[in-house]
Image 1 (cartoon, helix red, strand yellow):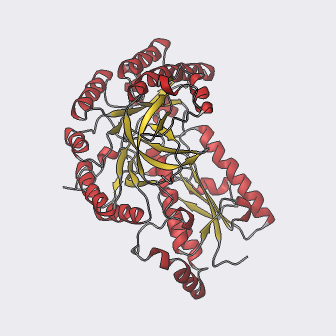
Image 2: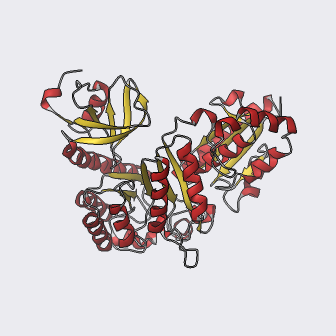
Length: 479
C-alpha cells in the first residue's frame, strides 16, 4: 500500500459538534494529500468519531471499531483511529486496553494525534503531488483554514463552526464535561477565518456551536460575548455571500436580552432559538441540576417571543429521569402543550458513568415506561406541529436548497422548516421563493410561483399516518 497518498473513511456519530470535529480532521487529512472514500473496504485510514451520550451510542461505536478491526486483520497496514467522547480527555488508556488494534486515539476536537502519526509518512514527492493536485483548487484558502474534502467543495451547503469547546456547567445527567473538558472559547479571528474559508468553498449556511453557546467568551477576561461574535460573523457573511447564520445550543441561565435583540436586528441571523428545558417539573429540574424553575423558563420563552417576532423555538426533553413519577411526567407533557415549541428533541434517560445521577440516584423508571412516555410525547408533539405548520399554508417563504431528494428539491426556511418542491432548474445552494401548498408535522411541500403543484404521495401518506395533514384544496389529487 502506498503510504504517502491514501484514502480515508471517516464516520461521525452523535451531535453537531462531532460533525464539526470530523470536518476539522478531514481538513487536516486533505492538507496532507489524502482523499475521502465512502467505502470502508477501500480505505487505508479508518476513523470513527464517537458519541457516548447514551449507552446505545457507545455500543454502536465499539461495533464499528470491531468492524474496522476485521479489515485490519486482513490488511495489517491499515490505520485505525478513534476520536470523540469515547476517548474523552481522560480515558484513552482504558480504551487502549479494550481496543488494542486502534493506532490513533484523538480527544474531542483534536486531530493532532492523527496528523502527527501520518506526518512522518509524507515525503517530498507527496508534498509536490498535493500542491499540483489540490492547491490550484484552493488558491483563495489561506494556511490554517478549513479545507473541505474535494467532493464536498461547491456542494456542501450547510456546515458547523465550533465557537466554544467543552462545558463547565455539569448537569447531573451529562457526561460532556468529563469527556470534552472545561469550556474554552475560540478567538474571533480563528472563527472568522473558519467561516470565511467555508464560504469560499461554496457553503451558504453556518451554525455556530457550543455545548452552551451563550457562554462564548465567558472564559476570556473582557472578551466578546456571543452577540458581539454574531455581528462580526454577519459582516463576514455580507462580504463572502454567506446566506444564513444559526447558533446552538443555548441554556436558559445564560440567554441575554442583548443576544435576543442582536438576533432580531441582523437579517442573516435566522430567527431560531434552541433552548432546552429537559423537564417540566421543578423537582426533576432540581435533581438534574439545571439551575432554573419552570416558571423562570416560561418567562424566558415569553421574552424571546416578545423580542424576536415570529421566532421558532426548539427544545430538548429527557423522559424517565431518576425518580420521575407519573405526575411529574404529566407536568412535562402539560408544558409541551403550553409552550408550543417548533421542534422537540426527545430522549429516554440513560445513566452515564461518572455522572452525578449515575453515582447517587437510582435509575428507577423501567425502560418500558420510559418508552411509553417517549411515545406519548412524540404523538403529542406531532399534533402540535401539524397545527403550527398549518400557519404557513399559502404563504411564500425563502427556502435555502440543500440537495435533491427523490426528484424534488429539499431545503429549509429561515425558521428551519423542511420544504420540498419540484422544478427543472438547478436550485442547489440557492434561495428559492416557494409557495407552501401542503403542510404536515415534519415537512411541507411547495411550488415556485406560477408552477404546477406536485405533491409527493409518499410524504403525504407518511405524515397522514401520524396526524391529518393540511393542503390547499386546489392541489389535492394533482400528483
